[in-house]
Image (cartoon, rainbow over all chains, first blue to last red; front, side):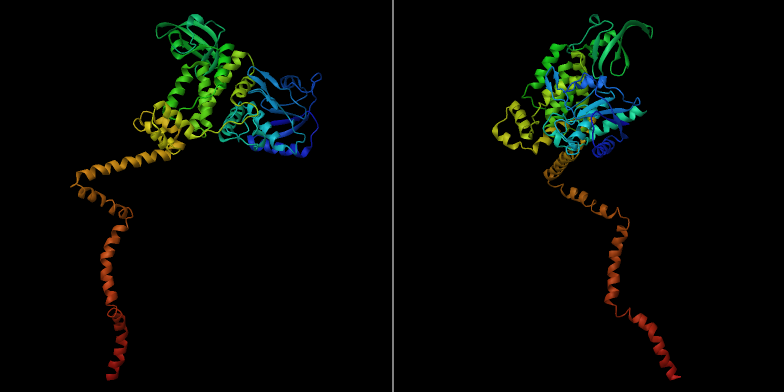
Length: 170
Length: 321
């Protein structure tokens, strides 16, 4: 089950569309599981790693994947090879991911890039790596063509995600 | 000796090592066990990813290519290699597969980076075949795991650090052309401009397959890797192989009649497969007789007329009565 938890107020209609898109992509049930508070002390831009560690009040089962959705900006990460733009963040094989609407303003108007980002981060939760196919949602998200693509997976990533989901269920 | 391989003297319990094609492991024990009456020293390793345990005899540690996890300096050199430009992928799939296999098992962290970069460059020319796509994913996974272990960071950060180099932010990957790869190979061969002109986009598949013909049996698995792209292309060389069979026939001169005889049976064969074809021939023979009756249709229709005539004759007879 994919549980969408909002950290800021969002309209219900685009959230329903996002649930439908996630279900189509992963073949796993998806629902809006309410909202949660951003931990005190985390200023904007939010530190994604701390946010995932510190956010509380989320109820989920062991094999559930939680997608946090916020409209606030996430802090870019300093990595050994450079600065990584961070429109979303998740740890490989774990159960929580966070994405932001930034730099977009409205979820409904910028649905495709946000949904693509959601697929990307949830894909990392199922241990998918970045993909070579620009049409795939696992393509590196900081590339210019990422936001113009559809929220879908390539055949390879789709099959791998299905395999991982099957393994998680068994 | 494989790059960065570790001898038993260097290994100690608690060390992090890389088992080729398996990933980062931690040495959990080095002890002596009696196997088949022989006393052997085993190094026991537990894979960090999923906890799988493997025991390797002391004598095999070096041969297998077990090595210590790369350090920060190695990772820097990997980033420098990934950032460098100018490498072109090998278009000979067989050579490429052999090289990549060697890099995966004995190339160390730099070998993993080479596999990732080469396959990425190749993907800029055309989509990777399934097997190479899987190889790319495996190499990337192993590289990310080792970089994460070397830098002591999360895998997602290690992967992003690698991909910031491979996919610089704000820039799209270049689209490469087959000619670009072909020129590189030809330059290496030192061929003249005349031959350069012969190598266009269409020649590239044959370049890959040409070496595959002599040893198809040896690497049937490798052939399967690119079967999607090459299956149609491999048929072409086979067709090319058939004409040579016809050439010796022409050279024999007097024999062409025999091959012609051989050629004729196939013609009846297509007739033979449909079993009804053989009866068709007799039908043809039979048709002329049928055709004759049509010619003598006047006589045959006469027969029914004869049947009709008797009644006519009867009245004639009756008339007599």
